[in-house]
Length: 113
Length: 116
Image (cartoon, rainbow over all chains, first blue to last red; front, side, top):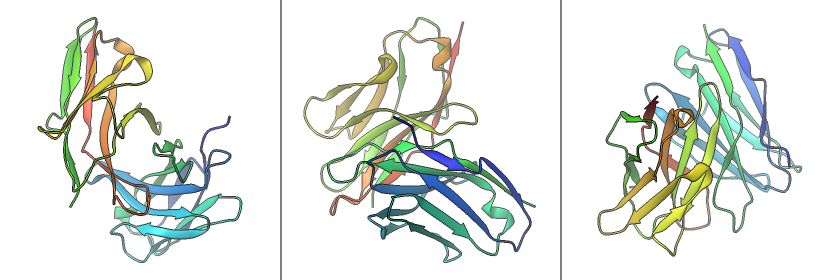
């Protein structure tokens, strides 16, 4: 069974631009969560989607948003990029009801210059 | 509020020796606890989980973890370390605990260095 895939793997953007990251969960998994990983703040939860609905959100500004499609694929968007948004963005999928462990993709490394 | 602490930034161990990576947690209610490992330029790989039941949980690659409710700890262990175990290890707790939501709260991570 294929794992979680994320595209693109690497991205370089300029301050003020916006970016969209994509995540395809493991087949059959209905929950997708997003995390930001930085050296200073560690791993922080961004949001979770289940059946196209956001059901949990972390403590991030409104510039960070996401959505989930009917096939469970998810995208996250960051608008008006800041230097501090440079990070590894990780997507994880879970079976959903009855599933506990999250399976992570390789991440998208975003660099904001 | 839920939190996870990994008191050691780095753990050094000789190959063949047992290893322990420490984790303590603070949650309300019964904890769902996890260990993940991260290799350079990679995502996180799931090692093991504690949901309920036996306090000693066995996971992937020979790792195990001991859940201790009275000490609110969930230490990761392996009887004999390999150089290839060198990586960054994260302990995590799932919260909130109603609604089945999947928000993981991570510790800061512990870098494990296994020397030949």
